[in-house]
Image 1 (cartoon, helix red, strand yellow):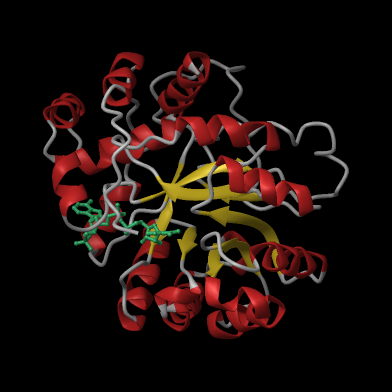
Image 2: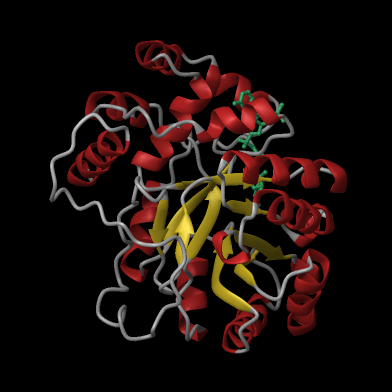
Length: 323
Ligand SMILES: NC(=O)c1ccc[n+]([C@@H]2O[C@H](COP(=O)([O-])OP(=O)(O)OC[C@H]3O[C@@H](n4cnc5c(N)ncnc54)[C@H](OP(=O)(O)O)[C@@H]3O)[C@@H](O)[C@H]2O)c1
């Protein structure tokens, strides 16, 4: 873990332009590269390191995924459109939505507007959506519904939102979606060790991503270690603590404030940087264009091992979500 932290910190420093030694493992891969199907056969079983130059990670599916993007939980259709547009404007290329958020139409509109206004190509954007539990029994049709609402030919990543009745059937429906070219990568959300193992008994495609509540008070190290042999990457929801108590608590911690002051950054930026250097993808939610730009401006500094350890020490297995 320490070695990974050091590597990531070095990569971060490189990305910030502080040193230019070659050979530290930074590659220059394109944002998206159609997997040939051959390249990953022997190397898919461990997560790949985050590339702080391209701001992406290669998934076990062979696709590249941005390591930071915009979350849209709680956003109305029009707010989602604006936030997605503003996120794409500042350079974010990852977008997270879900059936249950009821805003996929807005997300699709934001993408279409940004592609037109900023000349961004569809293949440069990575869109995640999720199947809600009540549609698991009807999952094949629900995959098509996601594309319809988003106005897209494919989604980059589709997740099962929670464990529930018929989740195995829904996972297999997502696998059919991959084979049909409607989905590039598939994964899980709000799953823990036992349920991941249960899904692996029926899965023919390993989950590329596991999206769980993750922040300094609940770091998910056990589940992260559990999924690592599958090559599955952990993605944080509530990376800043979530709206309300969580965000206030984490951003008022002296440790976080001290580290932020030392780097001339905000506490929000320190939290997001800590996730990335821990090898966890982040999707901070925001309706504020300034906040979105700030959240993305975290590639010109790196936390030291000592700072990472101080934040790691905050672990208390405390959730902020009530569900
Ligand atoms: N799979 C699941 O079950 C699940 C559950 C929850 C969330 N999610 C996903 O994860 C994403 C992230 O979670 P979240 O949005 O609930 O919580 P979050 O990202 O931890 O926090 C969102 C809050 O942070 C504020 N914020 C963001 N950047 C800020 C900045 N630079 N300065 C000050 N405040 C800032 C936002 O306020 P402003 O709007 O004022 O910027 C908002 O109140 C969601 O949007 C959603 O896509 C998934």
